[in-house]
Image 1 (cartoon, rainbow, N blue to C red):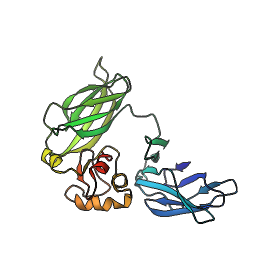
Image 2 (cartoon, rainbow, N blue to C red):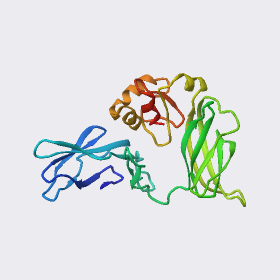
Image 3 (cartoon, rainbow, N blue to C red):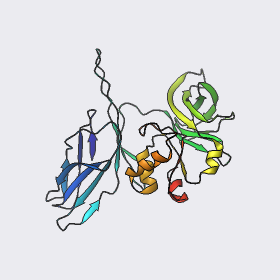
Image 4 (cartoon, rainbow, N blue to C red):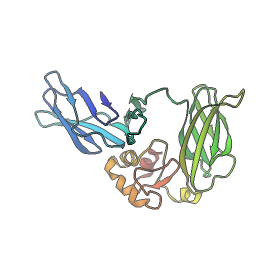
Length: 273
């Protein structure tokens, strides 16, 4: 169990071998420890708040014989940066907590407050010729109107499972762009839900010339890409060093960006896409 309040104060509880020492780490740094009781239960209250940004929490235990057991799956905490108090009180934004198992789909442990969004983009990818493709989710049967830099790029209809896809017919030039999705009412064109985010269009020659590469997807971060590619999240610094022309701030990467993964095998690179 993982719970994080808007201030970043966390509670982590679970089970381990009775009497074992349990360690909690945030992005590889120890932030809390506890000893499992006679029933194997433990609770960890980190002394410091979780830092803003995308943070990975992981557990490990050491039993009385000295054997170390790693937690089965890390947890990613998307901790927002809280704004300074204003004259009109504003409710703090709660963090989102996601279980990121390497063998199963991510699972929300602490979802965002309020109703779930009805339209989203989940995929920014390229076909063999380098044409860009967008995909995401929306209300099943709903019509999603896509805009690139505020110019209409086409409509897509979500299928019965809520999935939609669109390959814009017009050329999308290399560089930074903005993507807007409107879920519309077919009867009157009224916007029922909206999502916006930046994306980067990589150049087609760059795609062909770099077999060891990754196309950044929505909600990815460098720590998760490095962990998937190299097995260690801390190796994100190698990705930053190899892509300095695109990465100005390691906390700010955009869907559609194409990064070189130095030393990665084609198989490991493809798992990050």
